[in-house]
Length: 182
Image (tube, rainbow, N blue to C red; front, top):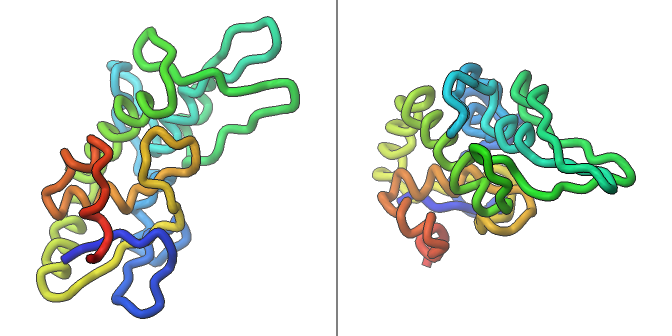
């Protein structure tokens, strides 16, 4: 069985999926630069990383001004959006709407990351599935957040676990008990 670990497990078989993990596992990190990832609800546009999509579509505002996206984040590896003094994030652009972080993760991050898993990492997902059939395996990426509505950094490894275990619908509904060993 495959499980998600919010911290680096010392007493279990673990696959590190942090951005600086060994190849091929680092490719699972949301910041990994795959290139040409279609941006959901923006036909004809792409990003080099999943994180770049969410960060690039963050609406950052200054006092008295509307929030602006920064398509420069679509290029290069994913990196956190820099918010200067006197600025704040007022939401995320999905199509023509401004939405919360939860809606952005549902409508941008999840579809883009699932596209990557199905189109760029399919063989490695299959390999993980096979490894999890042979023994319990814990996936770890350094992010302890599995709540798409929580603004803290989000765990892509938890999505991988849900996909492999066939519990993605539960995960999307916020039922995350299946991710942890019982």
